Length: 111
Image (cartoon, rainbow, N blue to C red; front, side, top):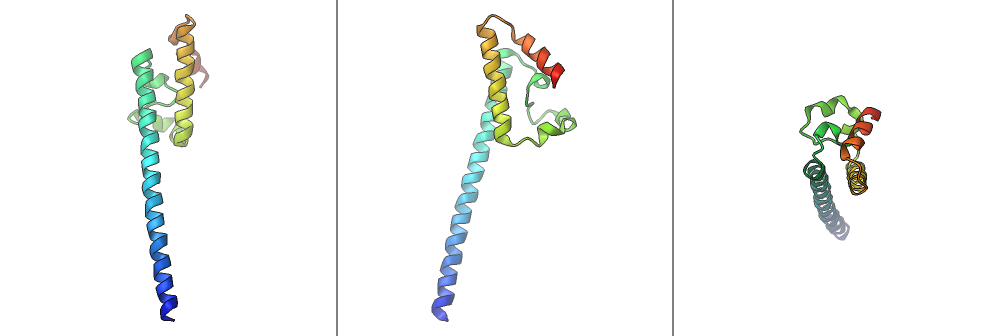
C-alpha cells in the first residue's frame, strides 16, 4: 500500500508539473498572437492611414467593438489571419497603383 500511495503522489506531481508547463506555454503563445495582432493593426494604421473603424479587426480599445459581436468572439488566430489578408490586399492595391481608400470603402460597406 505504501508503494502504491508513493507512486500516486509521484504521478500526481508529474501531472501537475506538466499541466503548469502547458499553461505557461499556452499563455506565452496567446500573448505572442495578441502582440502580432497589435503589430498588424499598427502597420495598417501607420503604412496605410487606416482608421480603426475601417480595420477588419479593430483594436481592442475601440468601445464600439461590443456592438459587432462577431468580431469580439472571433478566435485570436482568425483575427490575425483576417488582418494579414487585409494588410496583404492593401499592399497589393498600393503597389498596383490603386489607392487603399478604395479597399476601405468597399470593405466597410460590405461588412
